[in-house]
Length: 380
Image 1 (cartoon, rainbow, N blue to C red):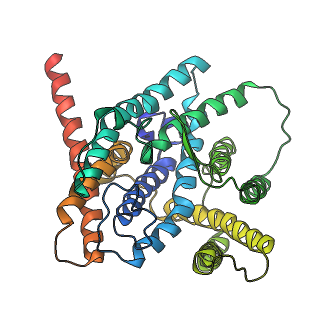
Image 2: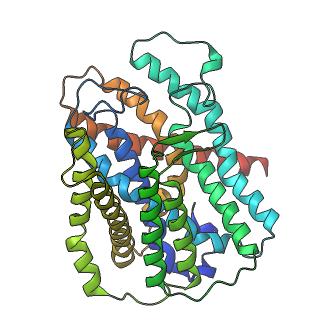
């Protein structure tokens, strides 16, 4: 995940600092969103989430709905941006081996170690007895499945698909970035709308892949958009579009508000629609796609303008971020259990859990890297 060690010179040096910093910030937002699941008030997380605290609040649920719009599209965009760079001077097989080592080996270790730990904490936090050992794995637990680890095999799949597409000699017309963005919007809207109309919303969970049906193609289009931006060298030029950036910054909450309103309306008034079911779906998914585009753009451009810099502390966080993502749920579960019976408000618990989880994960990864480094020095 760290671009400093993957051909920084090939991507023009410090022009990629902001993407590393943005990716690390998004991982923090993922921790924030997942910590909110412990305290959300709707009850939708309670059947499967690692800890379900009886002290709840409405803020964590609303915050998750907002973060869920843009977190993963942004991560997939960044991953796609560096996919062409990862292929430089590599054969197809060496590219796949490198991605398998980077993504799938940690995934295998995590599903065999962390998923069982997840279920241990899940049952213990609810004062339930532990069960037969064979039910503690992602392919046998029924409810928990891969949970947060779904991202790793899906990203590996996208890398493989991108490799195949790059090897197929298909005549693709030259298109501008504006046309590509419009294509992402149109494809995303048509896909989500169709999945809704045909009743295919929800999750598909199999041994190797977990994915949200109405989001999978959207994530892949943002991955491809990132790769397209790399090929256009879109970040090699100076900042442009200052007025556009500020306008989008000012109005992006309009589609976000519309999306959340139409998303929650059927929950508040089941079976009722302001206009009609079809119009409701059109507004819902059009506002969602527009929200994704606006928020992803704002995140990227904000970090490009104000966080295109390196530093010792930033570098450490960037090096840790990938493994922070992998371990954060288990660390969060342990801390959330300690907070279960404390007589403090859920909002304060939410803040404590988020900060302590992120800090603890970074300390764990930092300590492990230092210990591994010392062992390697001794061996030499």
